[in-house]
Image (cartoon, rainbow, N blue to C red):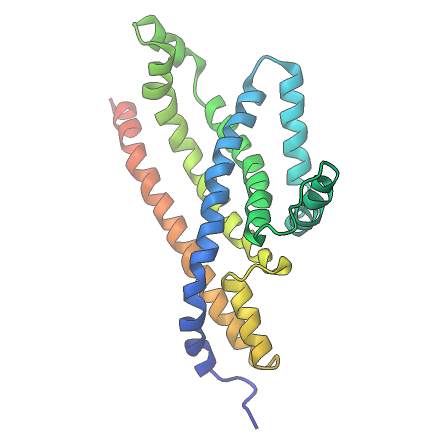
Length: 235
């Protein structure tokens, strides 16, 4: 009879799980890239003088932040093909990863719009005006003065958003994506649902490691980008 808990299953599952991290990284990476671009658009709308643009962007952010990730995932996975059929498009044959990327792009964009908006508003408006008054163009003022300072403010929240996205992305297996979590469930099913605890411990170790690496990486980046600001304050 098999032991109820066998530590060897933890170590033996790593070689089977780690190759599927490339799927997890691909989905998370694309969601982050597209989410940042969309987040900039939303942040620009929130910071614009147009009340309509502000309300639309704020409404979008509120709805997305109030929608559970798994609910949004199913809405996109089942809803987009259903809507596309009404205009004669067949999206049922699309790779599952496409729907996952769309879902988490929409969600990450809502997070990033708030990160960008709050970082921008934390910078004194007088700095932009002073930079322009000494001969810098608006683009140069943003690139040399505003953006570097806003980046330092945004980095911690950006890192937290990346960790949250990586963790929420684990729900992708529910619609059939075989990433590292999907592979873990396949291993458990192949073992007739035995030693599931050991497999999930291995999975937890992988996510713990990734989260710690991201957190430490962004902490290091924050210190690097803060050096210039610290030297200015010291003078």
